[in-house]
Image (cartoon, rainbow, N blue to C red):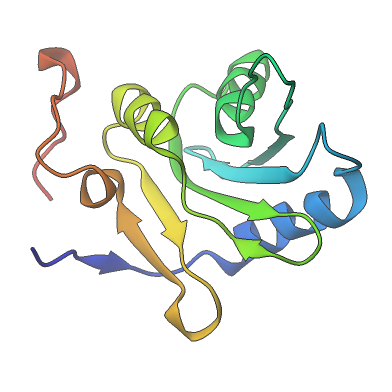
Length: 137
């Protein structure tokens, strides 16, 4: 399967990396995410790990964005603390991101292999709600 790539939003990566460096402390907060809202704002969040489970940074970001009135996201990236760089979303986050934002672009990879792909490229052959079918590009 060929995955179409899109321009990389380096400002978004730096925003997530900054939050990972300055806000991720200890085992409870090890990942940061940043997303660009449709209106251009950058929204950030960190994960909330707990031994009973807990939301990933991408899922916290969805709620944070909604609380700020941003219901449409164009792109997202997750970055690990301790300079681990970009981390692709887990399977649960991939499905939730697809369900909420079927046109979302996701920044994945590190260093020379960093790229931006459509969420469907990370979750091929997935079920998409009838009301959330992406528009043809």
